[in-house]
Image 1 (spheres, rainbow, N blue to C red):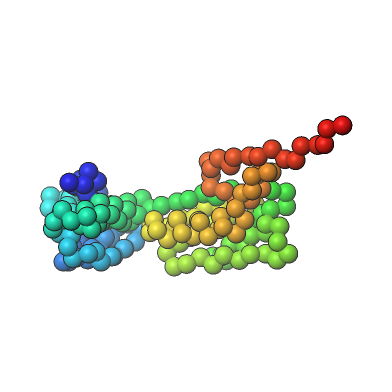
Image 2: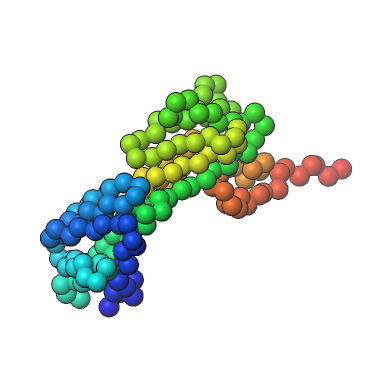
Length: 180
């Protein structure tokens, strides 16, 4: 049995989980998320915990077991605590600024790049070089953070670009001078 799939999902106080067949709705202090899952997965809410069981030991069901459990756990954490990714901008003249709910990046192109905040995700330019992405849906937060990083990924020679906070950028040696 899946080591992840068999773990129960504790429901914290202030979070309400509703299981309706193969769909789950989670409501908490930060908002509400709902999602439908494969009907082969059996979802049960008992004693303040959500349990996921699979129908058979077929490889497809084994794969869905852990996935389903992880997605529900992410929904519970999202509506109770929320998710956040922090990006750092490195480079001379590179900066980010807040324009309404959107983000404008000046990262060495001939034009500024505007990132529109999707519904349920907040973009904050804390300073010229730090961008914070917040939301209750882990998938959306990670996707927007990846799209912001993709505008100018860190390059290996000078380390300039947009990177996640704490990300290590492996540096390469530049050109060696010709020996005389």
